[in-house]
Length: 203
Image (cartoon, rainbow, N blue to C red; front, side):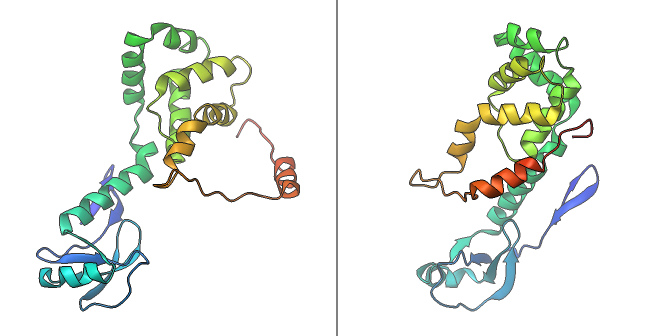
């Protein structure tokens, strides 16, 4: 199968109807008979097995799923990865119109006096490219209103919005125990990176 965006293939894979996919998530304690493959969404080692071997595979620690679930998971991850390309200008206008019904002042203060809808679209694309949810459109618009009169640099405006959505970003990166695993940089390295950043007309 192939998944296409605007007629361009962006993802592809193979499924075996009538069989099950046993995925080694790193917890498998043994091996099982089957056809070697790679789980398409997360690129983990896996095997296509006969349904009769399901119980043994699960006992060994494999995650066993139906072919339809493989396809749905791959499609979901593909949409997440390419959602910035899927958000059209028309959809942004519709989102703004919908928000204006409940919070008209939020939209009126920003569009079109401070930012054009096309610029809002670019900020939303930036966020989606980083897998930052844009469900809280009201908070995003309020943040853009707060800073759009100070700068029109969309990269910097995206950064302000990202700060505003910090709680949401943290929440989606917590594990099942509500723990968030992070990597920190030495402050000296942060200073070097910060000194190397330069914002200009081209970003």
